[in-house]
Length: 426
Image 1 (cartoon, rainbow, N blue to C red):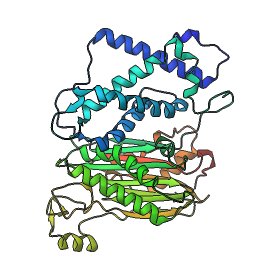
Image 2 (spheres, rainbow, N blue to C red):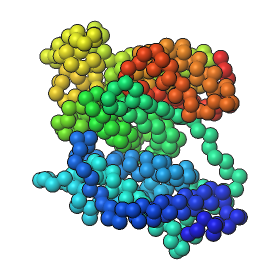
Image 3 (tube, rainbow, N blue to C red):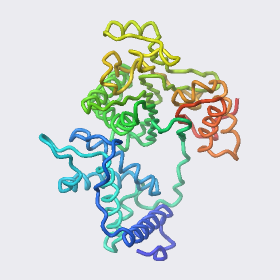
C-alpha cells in the first residue's frame, strides 16, 4: 500500500492510520534486508523472569499496548488493534516453543523472549493489514467507525517523566493508562489508572508490578456485582487482593528484588489511592492541597511494632532506619526474604469535584528533595503558560529535584482532573 494511494476524501484519522501502516512496512523491509533471520531468541540475561500461564495475558497486553504507542500507532486505532492482536498472538504462542522455558509442569516463558516475540508477531499482524484485500476493512479498527469528519484529537490529560540520575541502574517504573477501562474491558469504560513503582535490588519487581497490577486490579473490579456502586470497601479490597497476589506470585520466583508502589484509580468522580512504601501522591486544587500517602517507614511506631511482632528488627544503618538493617521501607511488593516486610497496601478515597485540578505521583527521589509547595506552584504556572508543553511539566519537577541534590532515580507523573484550559493559575 503506497502512501500516495490514499484518497483525499477519507477521514483524517484513517489517512493517518494508513500512513502508519505504510511506514511500518517500509521499516520492516529495511530491517529484513539488514537482518534476514530474526527470531525471538535473545541472549541470556539476569534482567528477566519466568512468566507463568496465569501471568502471560497481562504481559501480552502490556507489551502490545506499549509497542503500539512506541511505533506511533494513531490513538484512535490502538484499542481494537490491541484486542485483536492479543487474541492472535495468544494463539501464535502455542507454536512458539523457542520462547518457553523448559521444565516440568505448565508452560512458562522467558520474559525478554516473550517481549521480543510479541514485537515480531505484532509487526507481522500490522503488515497483513497492508494487503490490498484488507484495505477496505481498516476503518473497522477505528474507535469511531463511519464518518469521523469533525472528530478532534483528544487533549492529553496526563504526562510522565523519569530519569536514572546518579544510580548505576534505572529501577523506577511507571504506568499511565488513560484508557484503563477500555483496555481491560471494564463496565465503566472511562476508568483511568496510574502507577509509580520504585524498585530496589534491581528493577524486576517494579517491572513485574507495572504489567501485572493493572490486570490483577481489573480482574478484581470485574467481580463487582452492582456496577453502580462506588463503595470504598469494594475498591479497598480490590486493591488489597491485587497487591497481595502480585507479591505472592513474584515471591514464588525467588528473585531478590522489591518495589514500592503508589497507584491511582479514577472512576465515577472518585479517586482511589493504594500504596506500599514511600512513593507519594499529591492531590491539588484551589482550596485543597492534600498529600494522600503516609509512607511506610520502619521507624513509624505502628510499623516498628508490626515488624518486631513478626520477628524482624528495625536497625539504624547507612543513615536510615531499616528492616533487619537492610530495607528502608516497611512494606513492598517482592522482598520474599524479608518476612516482616508485607505487601498489604494502605488505601484512601476522595470524592472529586470541580475544585480539584490535578494529581502528582512520584517516587521518593522527587518528594524527598522538592517541597510540595514548589510542585504545586510549578505545575500551576506551567499549565497557565501556553508556551509550556504538558510533557515538559514533570521534567521541570525532576530538574528541580536534581538541583536540590537528589541522588536517586526520579519519576514524576502529572494527571489532570479536568481539561487544561479549565485550570486557572493560583
